[in-house]
Length: 133
Ligand code: FES
Image (cartoon, rainbow, N blue to C red; front, side, top):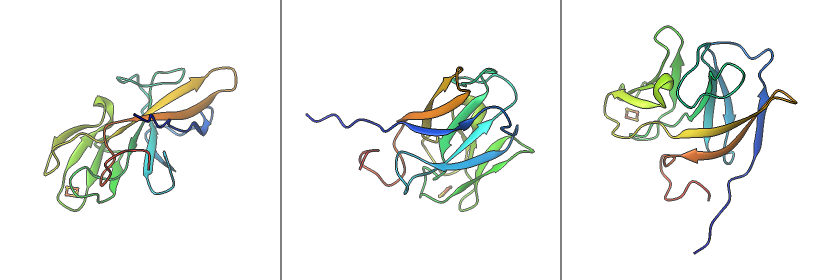
């Protein structure tokens, strides 16, 4: 079979990256919106000097509505049918109509240039048969 490779996409530098704020980007293509978050404490799968940076698809796994980040509860919330996802636990679905966790964007950190790069996706982006179109 054919193996399609994920692109590498620079997300930004850690220096100056705000804590507990969702930073929008798209990956692996422009029709797949995502959020990166610097949690401020080390989390599973977190990258960067603090092991605290994670990123997820921002399309709810239930029916594809955009999730929004709530810094107060430190969760992603879907306004359509109230699913909640936990970025500090690999995007795990906490409650709601969704049955799948939020797809997690694989990140790499280059300490020499203080740069975060997206390199892959764990889980299937909503509405797709394959993450790479
Ligand atoms: Fe998100 Fe239904 S689309 S809970």
